[in-house]
Length: 99
Image 1 (spheres, rainbow, N blue to C red):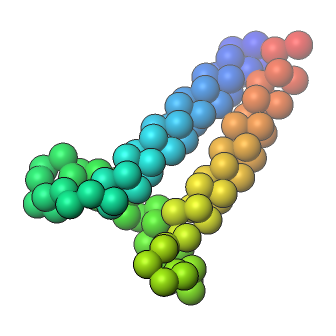
Image 2 (cartoon, rainbow, N blue to C red):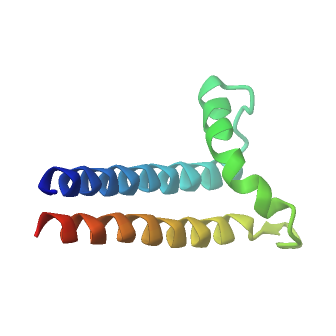
């Protein structure tokens, strides 16, 4: 059972890292939206392809107040909840299996 516990602990770490990268990419996208960046740049296109599936569901909600879009804030909150849940459950079961 120790090996399965280690596997779950490694998965928890992997998911934690993935969520950290997603947070970072969303912050970069938000900052880039404040400046006039070239939307046809390859790096910007890659960033948009990664982050758009996260932001798109929240953009359908009425979360705009004038020029301010609050959908990234809700996206961060949902990602935080998912991260806490997924990493927490995996970590909990990893600890139970290792002891």
